[in-house]
Image 1 (cartoon, rainbow, N blue to C red):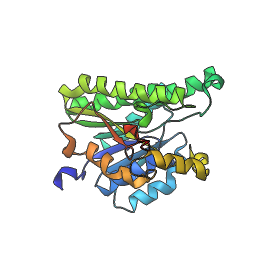
Image 2 (image 1 turned 30 degrees about the vertical axis):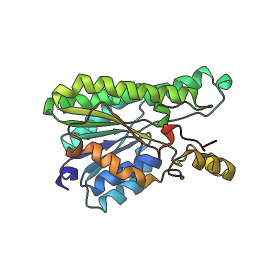
Image 3 (image 1 turned 180 degrees about the vertical axis):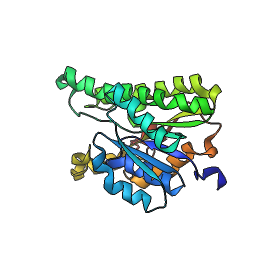
Image 4 (image 1 turned 120 degrees about the horizontal axis):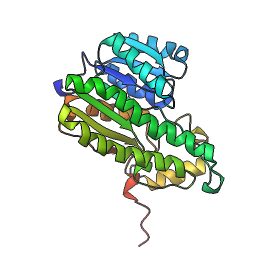
Length: 258
């Protein structure tokens, strides 16, 4: 279990005002890490900050808009000032606009790609400077099953997540010699605030489950062990990889017809 003990490590988890970001932070805290958390309005983080502190962990909350380069630089500097280092980055902040491809606007495209892809790169870049100086780091970029599969209504989102997969491989090659691993954690279909409306459609949920070999959507706690693994010494010889946590939907499995 020492391989998965994060005691003494500092983890920066972006986009922790709700959803999977909170689950990632919670899992890392339970494994022993102190947590820096971000939101575009840090005041919204106060209840979650208290929850993590109740686990006996140190916390720090700061404003971060990943579409603003100055905001990224400021937030990373504040976290390093508060803790003295960042050992783990979970690049979670993201967004989506679900529309048929013919209805996607120029602004829709820019919002999604600037948040999910450009923001991921420049946050990783800002954090990696300190990691490289200390010759140690774990960067976990959050992707999705759309890194490897296409879905109607998700053209710019899929493009951004596919870009995150490619970006992960490039950064892994760039920074591996400095002791920094870079991997992509790619959830499948998990209910979040962004897609909750889909899960209110029972017919759609049945259709989805029929396509998933494990026959259910993901539960947020299904991501606890994977994120801790990628943040820990247990993954020290793994870099540039995309870990799909998707119940097997990326296999393309469907009902047998013969």
